[in-house]
Length: 298
Image (cartoon, rainbow, N blue to C red; front, side, top):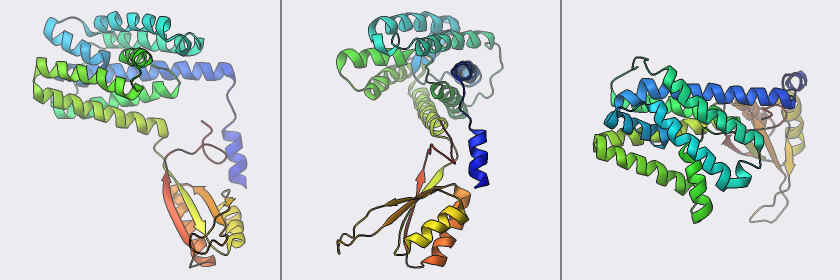
């Protein structure tokens, strides 16, 4: 019970002003991480793994044009087009549009400030992997603030609105065109490195979005549901939900208990079930993100 009281104290909701400040801090921090990863991993190794950053990498290596200028030159018109063409998606949410504009302008600014940083590695494979992790980490932080850094994401949204293609398909087309262009400029091998970077970025964004601490969802079917329910509430100190289930063969009612626990509580839960009902049917599965009392609020 003390755990639940402490969780309530630790998870007091933020005021609207505090939340706005917190989200803008995420936008700036995430954009800075993306910019640094771009300069120390992707740009020096000619890895154009999609997006405006990938286009700026290609232009820099062909025409020696400063990547930050290219990113500004592409991002700002795309943002304006997004405001005019997407309507409700940007203009309908002033805060979202403002945060997106902040990311759109700030990311190239940090790219420019950090342009003289030494490359972390000149191994293309390592650069693709760790550059993808860095970009994914930064974008994941930005996305958690319900924002964006603009760029080809906005272009994909525009195409989605006027063509009927899925948003995922539009993003794939945009990034695919950049990778194909990198193959024409740098060679097929570097396009493969770009694909590795793109894949790593996507996986890292997913990890940041859903969190690193996987919880476990447990389904228990037992004729001793009342004893198990009390044990889960008092000994494991987790809430439990009683569901109505029916046997597929007998069609008899079979109460089902559902409980979500942290990974380090799974052993305690299994021991409890084994003690009360060794014949209980138990299913343990991953719950990548859990919101609510005893877990995170956002």
